[in-house]
Image (cartoon, rainbow, N blue to C red; front, side, top):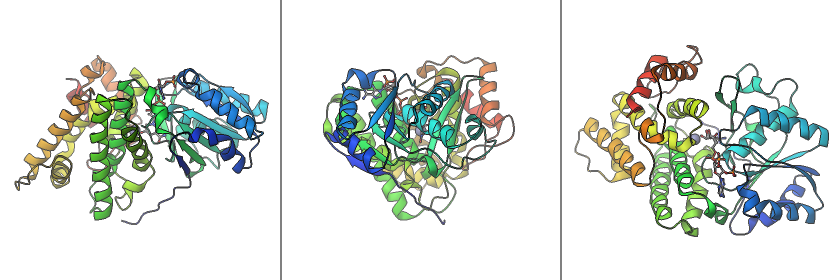
Length: 392
Ligand code: NZQ
Ligand code: ZN
């Protein structure tokens, strides 16, 4: 399959690299920064103070806006747009994870375009630009530091939607694995699931994949699984933190999708409704529904799932792709459980009513206007069936 691969983000990786933030902003020719951050972990760890010091040393002024929550909200984005206009900010610095980076990207769209920023997420129109964004990453998970996406939740109706364009790709990403050592284990593991899923979404498709892309993808998934287990035992393992952090970027910057025709992405779309309605951690939500999605669709291309079982779990190829596919799905769920991740909605802590499941399925299908996935095109009734299978 033909493909485009565009990764304009400058990566600055390793211990102490956050000290270089000021220099990196200066390199962009910008003068006034919005330091955007979350609920306080970056303040408590002293990271925000370090960033301020680095900006001051480079002669760059700044304003701050914290309070971004996981599943970042549109109201905070609007607040950021207002503040940046008043303060004449020309660079958005996200200090945090996917939620903070996505919120900064949305602010960037709001500043660079006229009208209501939600229009882009609501598919009403496309953006013509985005104010420059940079990231100091504190959690390896979403891959937003190198991806073209931003995912925002509109509290009016609790609708969670993503918008993708190359305009929002970070100018730079500072990645110090040590910064992730303060993460609670649940967030570390949820992040590892999300990282693996960004590659698995691209891996499961109906096209004939490139051998090189498959090889990179399989190595990435195995590496994240191995290091997730190491981090379960020792949260301060720097090498494991580094492997996982680099995987988070490579898994979602397009590398593992070269030649795959774009990938499936149904699990993500199905999970986004869970995040919107129940405010769950994104990676944990993915773990809770992936097995049900896989069992629902594997018959469309059992050979692909069989290859996954052999390459990821070392299962013996017994010539029965359907049996191998199911064994591989079972193994993946065993892995999720081994690192404390849920494999059902119940384990995720979501007790959903029939009406809620129908509502999520309707929202996921944009009220009947789209299907999700390519392995099998799923309409609202398919998605509803998958939520039901995932209930546990
Ligand atoms: O808010 P604070 O106090 O910082 O706490 C955060 C938050 O509670 C905490 N945390 C982050 N770094 C920490 C830390 N706690 C201690 N020490 C640290 N070093 O972790 C919690 C989760 O943070 P969040 O940013 O929400 O995590 P993640 O990176 O998993 O981002 C999830 C969001 O990204 C979206 C998801 O849907 C979700 O909204 N995604 C974005 C994508 C993209 N833009 O390309 C792709 C993904 O598929 C995903 O959809
Ligand atoms: Zn994801």
